[in-house]
Image 1 (cartoon, helix red, strand yellow):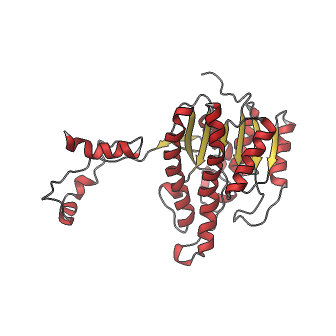
Image 2 (cartoon, rainbow, N blue to C red):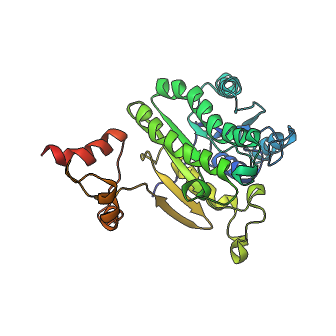
Image 3 (cartoon, one colour):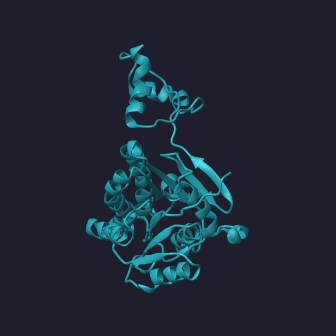
Length: 301
């Protein structure tokens, strides 16, 4: 296969001062991209800030012969996200790739969680990705080209104890992707999502055991680089990536059961549950309209 390159491309990467974001930035820069390294330099919980994190990654890229600038904009606000994209445009005149990677953790069971901690996590992960995507979409539409990569998590796809805020935000990103893929399609904008498995500050304490040395951010970055590239014509995909493992994740629906008007009742649902929950012959849908047609279309025949 032809080598995947980013020569002449500009990539904006949030949360790129360390961990996964840094790995994405270094790999895309190595393959020719100009990088905007966005990071507040705060703690895992999103407290305080330190400009040196983003600056360090910029220096790494420049030392290897690449081009990069640092951004300290707070992408959790519409104004901050717009400022980030504006800075990229002022410096380089275009934005080809947006990788929404920034995130924080404030873990606790829901009934013990301070509402502010729930809102803060949703604000950074979900709203931050939405605001950055909102700011960059007009640029990509005008260019008739763009790649946006969201970052979900197994906690969002499957749930995790003590992470209701994080899980809700992460699954929300899948919903955001599913709408943006439709809004960007005719403009050549492809929107996909990565579900990473990697050892970073945010996964400290997770019992990865012997996989510890395998679950590096660099092994996730390879998948993200593909999704962010011109070689990827796909849209609306969820890519699970980590430790050399790659797989797609899909939301599917089984064939289901249709009840007549006379049959519809709670008892019908209970009696037919085995068939209702059977996903053999499952199908995926490209949009909510497709899903409605999939359910109600056969009734019109």
